[in-house]
Amino acid sequence: MDPRSFSCARWNVRRWVIGLVALGALLTAATLRPPAARAATELHQDVTVAVLSDSPPFSYQSPNGTWEGLAVEMWNLVADNLHLDTHFEGMNREALTAAVAAGRARFGIGAFAITTDRLKHLDFSAPFEVTGVAIAVPYVSRSIGGTLLDALLSTTFLNLVLGLAALLAVVGTVFWMVERHRNPDFAGRRVHGWGSGIWLSIVTMTTVGYGDKAPRTLSGRVVAALWMFISIALISIFTGTVTTLLTVARVGTRIEGAEDLDRVRVVCVAESAAAQLLADRHIHCQQVPDLAQGFAALRNGRADALVHDRALIGWALKQEPDLPIKLLPGTLRPEYYAFAMAPNEPLRRRINEAIAHALDDVRWSQFRFAYLGNQAERH
Image (cartoon, rainbow, N blue to C red; front, side, top):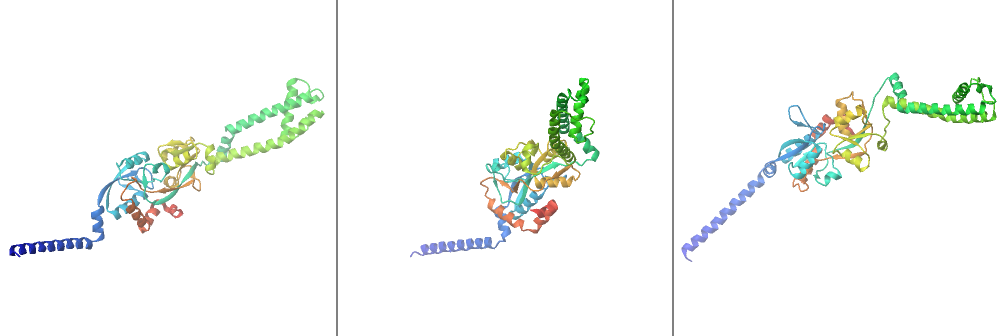
């Protein structure tokens, strides 16, 4: 073999050996790097997150401009786990859905529940909080005098009195017509005799029975007997109606659950899960932009019930305990809060894993108690 060829071949082998050793060193270094450093290299990236503004206690902006709330705290735990640098942008529900669907924001967070309509455009992470759609009603405690006056001036009471007066007039006229020819108490001038008939119908209905006027004919006594039996039912109806009016005037419209919503005026927040639930059940609701205006509708008498997220209503009532509004027990349907994202989001699985780790983190329990207080123990 030519010495030159042998020397060249030996040099090529040496180059291959040196290359393999260098590659092995690089692989070894990459393997020995700490896991956090490898994750930072792989996942360290900037992301834009749309935040549902003005939905405490899950997401809201503090006076100094920072974002706070239970959903924000969960996102921060996830972002720390995945080494994501976050840029928050506040939006309403409609804008948040559009931004995430169009890719202007990579994720959407806040009091944002998983619904069938939203699943047509978005995907969601695993839920990090469970709450429910609930009903709030006005509660106005009045004095006895004010309550009685409200009941006496109500349309229902006035219609009841007018109807009863008309019925007394009809029965009194019948008494006069059957008694006027054979009973001197109902004879004389027409107005006097008719007035005696009215008086007899009144004392008969109230079972007072002074005895100064009484029917003497068979027809008159039959009418009196029938009127006595009818009066028993009328007095019961009158008493029950007045009692109901006094109760309603004192504690507000009586609504006990979802079965009562189709007969009262309902208000809900636009684009919310509660609005979709009511639409699915064919219950009409007046839509308002936010929860504050929903409360205003209850206070001003423009609505009888507010349907919205239980946690959000509870938080608002906790901040303003003097509001004449009470939250009914129970929920119409559970709500699952999660992070919104595009259907093809590559980080979806890793975000779900991070949420699972965060739910077991003691810091998450502390956050829930700080924002929800004793409500956190009921979920």
